[in-house]
Length: 299
Image 1: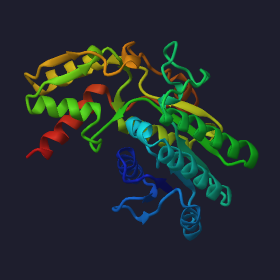
Image 2: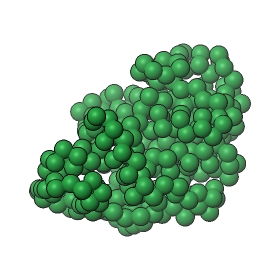
Image 3: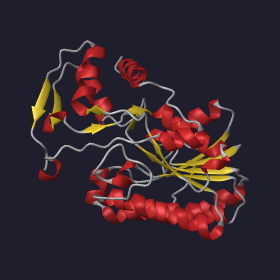
């Protein structure tokens, strides 16, 4: 299957391109950054359309987005331009072609701070930040093209994926580097927030299932493991696995909005039932991979 991956130079994109190629897919990566096969700004419809017309794709996975919440707060206009116009351009270009699948990456932030857990796909959206709102809007665009034009869309709402190429400012690499360097690990709000962290290979597997399974069309799926791990527990796991003496610093919340711990975990029953998904990489194995990767990068 020849598959176009937008945002191929991002954290998830790099993993997905490697994963799909390893599974026998022919993959073309596009990104606004150097290093990919085709350099394209997804907010430029003519450029996106040229990519679609220059090569015959069977499917597209749309990852390109402003995915940093703090950045979305500082520059909401750019967030909405990239996330909405970019997705709209990909959907419109896909409409002009006969594709077998368009997989759109949404986010667990679609649900905001859920009132109950585990969260199921029928629970309503409750966005908080511009990034959250952009993902709700992206899903509505996708369903509009699916229902009105028959574009074979599948939507994924991933929880906290981590992995080897993640930016160093993100939680897992930040905790690991602090442990490797013997530095304190700051835990705002005492690390009380609870989520479902998992290695990005599990998300790549979910994408593969959406590309391969006809039952994915017209559906949205949570992606995670169904687990529940607090930020403090995660830091303690990493500290133990690295044999570090780093201190866990219990700090107050950064903002009043964060004073109430966020508890957000997914139900993954739908993706298990419809697509046969099950996590392939355990939390411990995923952390081990990233610890080894970051240890090697320091040498």
